[in-house]
Image 1: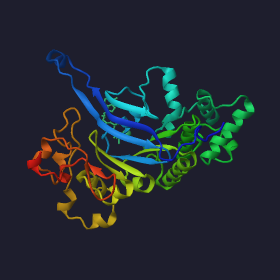
Image 2: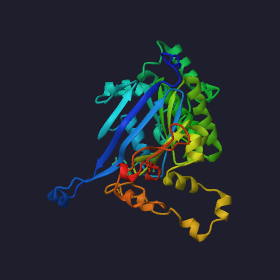
Image 3: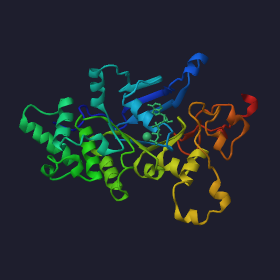
Image 4: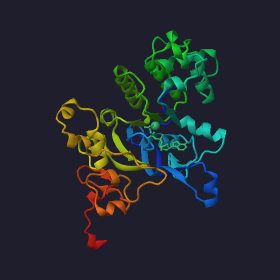
Amino acid sequence: MTLTPDAPAPPTAVVLEATGLTKHFPVRRSLRDIFKRTHEAVHAVDDVHLTLRRGQVVALVGESGSGKSTVARLLAQLYPRTDGDIQLHGESSRVKGGRQFRAYAKKVQMIFQDPFASLNPVHTIRYHLTRALKIHGNAGGNAQELEQALTELLNRVSLTPPERYLDKFPHELSGGQRQRVAIARALGANPEALLADEPVSMLDVSIRLGVLNLLRDLKERLNLAILYITHDIASARYFADETLVMYAGRMVEGGDSETVTQNPAHPYTRLLIDSAPDPDRIANMTADTADRGDGEPPSLIHPPTGCRFHPRCPVAMPRCSTDLPVRLEINDKPGHWAACWLYDTEPEAAK
Ligand SMILES: Nc1ncnc2c1ncn2[C@@H]1O[C@H](COP(=O)(O)OP(=O)(O)OP(=O)(O)O)[C@@H](O)[C@H]1O
Ligand SMILES: [Mg+2]
C-alpha cells in the first residue's frame, strides 16, 4: 500500500467545501405538541460555510454545545443535513447507502475525542488496522503485503517498533498511544481529509503536543486537509493555518489563525480568548471585570433573534437584537471577517 495521495495536486487545492450547511434536530414531541401542531427543533448548525484545502489545517473553535461536532459529523456524512451542500473535489455529494458512504469515507475520515470508546476493547490493534485496510482496499494482495501495510501505518504514527503494538489490546496502551492507533486506522483508508473532533482534549496535557505534532507532520507529508475541532483557541493558533469561531450554531469570525487569535474582532472571540486561564490576568481581576461577558449559552430551540450573541454581548446595539449580521471584512488582514454589526461601515442612510 502506498500512503501518498493518488494524484499529486497543488497544496492549496480544495478537497472539501461546505456551503450553507444546516442541521436542525427535531425535538421529540409530546402529545400536547401534536395537538398544537408545533414542530420544534434544535438549531444545532445554521448556514455554515467552510473550505478544507490540501496541506492545511482549519480550526473550528467554540464553547460546548456550539455545534462543532455536528459540523464534523455532517461533513463526514454520518447524519443527513437539513440544508446546504457538501462538495468533494467540486462535486456535490449526498451519501445515501453503504457503498456510497464507503467511497466517501475513503476520502474523508474522522477521528473522535475518546480513543478508548472508538476502539473495540475485545479486538487487537492488528484487527482494527487490518479491517480498515481491507474495507478501503489497501490491504495488498497477500499476507506479506498486508503485514507491510500494517507496519507502515504504525510507523506513520510513530508507534515503533510496530511488532510491539500489533498484538496488543486497546486497554494495554496509554491514551496517547490509543489515539495514535485511531489516527493510524483513519490513515488506513489513505484519505485526503481528516476531521479531528477534539483529538487531544481527553489526553494528558503532557502528551497533547506530541499528538498535535504528529497530525501536523501527517498534514505536511501526506498533504492532508485537516479540520481540527477544539475548545482551546490557544492550540488553534499553534496548530491551524485558519481559524473559524462558532457560537450557538453559527460562524461568527474567521481568518488566518494568527490574526483571529491575536487581533480578534468579534466580541465572542474576545470573550473566548479572555476566558482562557491566564494566572497574571486572574490575579489582576476585580469583582467587576471578572463578571464581564458572563452568561449562559442561549437555547437552540428558540435561538435569540438577530445576532445570537447579543444577549451576552457587552457592546450590543439596538439592531443586534433584530438584524442577523452578515460577514463583514475587518480590513486588517486579507480574509479576516466577522459577522458583527460593529464592522458595518456603510452609512445607515445608504441602506
Ligand atoms: N442527535 C442529536 N439530537 C438532538 N440534539 C442534538 C443531537 N446532537 C447534538 N444535538 C444538540 O446540538 C447542539 C450542538 O451539539 P454539538 O455536539 O455539535 O456541540 P459541540 O460544539 O460539539 O459541543 P462540545 O464542545 O460539548 O462537544 C447541542 O445543543 C446538542 O444538544
Ligand atoms: Mg463536540
